[in-house]
Length: 259
Image (cartoon, rainbow, N blue to C red):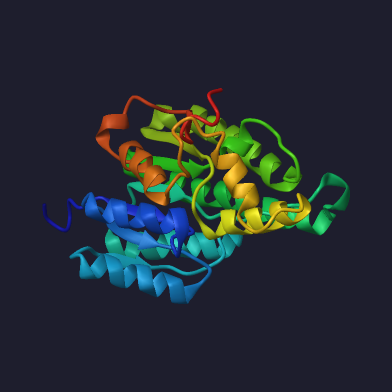
């Protein structure tokens, strides 16, 4: 495949965890990667990993919730790589606290990244993809966006919003050649779940790891999810095999949520 034919994927929040696994998987699938994170150091490590495997990677650090920055990232990606075929809007943050202890600033901070970031990246990538006549937008939702839970009013509501954004984007963009879907991970072994476990174990009077152990016992497949489990689904959604799928929020959670 020539450089002109190589598909280009942009993965936000690619510095660690699920985003890193997605970037490495798409590189293995043959994509040229534009990788984003607010942490330039971790981004450099992912870029090096892709390039050491023979892939091509462009690092575009920046805040996905900053409108000017997002527009600049898309312009840089298209300018350097010639096209943009797939957006994986993966960047996200979490806040764990009871409703009555959640500050307005905490709520707004979570929604700024998890919702505004997905909106801005999808809008700017969508503008290019519509002009190009094709593309795939894949958004990071969560099983927390399927059903509300304790201590996650900011995070859960932001992921409900991502599912709504995904459906709205799909309605408008699919007739113009761009599919839009979301993935809904469960209990993934990442730094985010390390934080959740720390907070919840303390509140439950358990040693560190106690909350994680309790919730893993509820997973029908019997193990905690790995970032690569999510990357496998994203690989499918980024491929031509998913061309007739749009507007969906697909669970990848080991069966912990079957709604």
